[in-house]
Image (tube, rainbow, N blue to C red; front, top):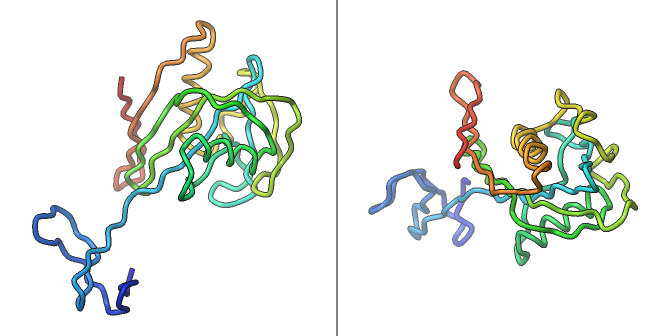
Length: 188
């Protein structure tokens, strides 16, 4: 941010009184402009022991596989967002179940929420943001071509939980160090 949306004056990056981090503060009107993490809402669409994956037709990670998901919109719930994203990316209708996994990604200011879902029918196809959509059994998943660590983790948890059909909530922080090494700190 460079200019105040309220008065158009220049913004400075500084720590406001009674705060602990830098914020964009208007030099003229003094309004503090907070920037908060984006929420990414996703589904884990299942049919029997298969999951529906989408091959991305957009950056980042063009051509790699992911679960349907994207940015939550204003005036929608996380469940509505997960359902909408599944319809947009995979043209698939789903029944959304419980929150299954969530990840904090502080390096990109995002929180990813994954909901277990059941496909209502097998009438699915690639949406505008997908090159291809396909159901995969566990042994068929292209693990080396999964776009994001949160997706890989969610799929790994799902296939560990599936035999018992007990799906506890999983969470982790995905942290990148300065040398670009990734660590995943799971919470139990």
